[in-house]
Length: 249
Image (cartoon, rainbow, N blue to C red; front, side):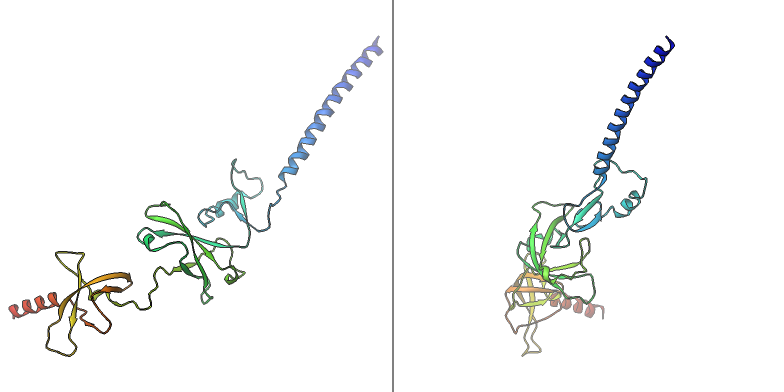
């Protein structure tokens, strides 16, 4: 009777161990499957960047470097890294709303690379966002001739872009300070014409129509011609100042 009881107990323990072994094998298989998932394979050739690029900037890089240390945790649905192909490269930036009307697709650009003295690259405006992406800012994207970009330039670097918005070789320009606004009609502009052949002749007011402005120069579309001599001073204000001075004397 004792042997029979021991035999039944042994059979039960054997069945129990078989079940435990089956569960262990299932856990082992699952661990091996999880291990395969931990091996990250790149879907494309390129350079690994930390995190996600937002408007051409990798803003989370410092914090992600610390989170990648052994035994650290990351939250779910986090973008840990981005694979970036080395070429082609494009440029993205923002443009102020005041300059938006002068810029359009296809306009030529010059790109100054971050290395001082490096040759400038050529390109053109690719697209402009239809709505603002920030207060008074529109997103603008540029295409660059890839054969003019050195090998050391990679995604995330900065540059300066000059856009040619207006090109008129025979434009007539004068200093901005030589153009004055009518006090009764701010939309009416004028200059003071000087007679170069008569030193005693007073400058005469002459209405003009303005065009494009750049730095300290302004384009004259109508009212002047090449060879005209104009005064840089506001002759009316100058005359008033001289009369005030005479009264004081």
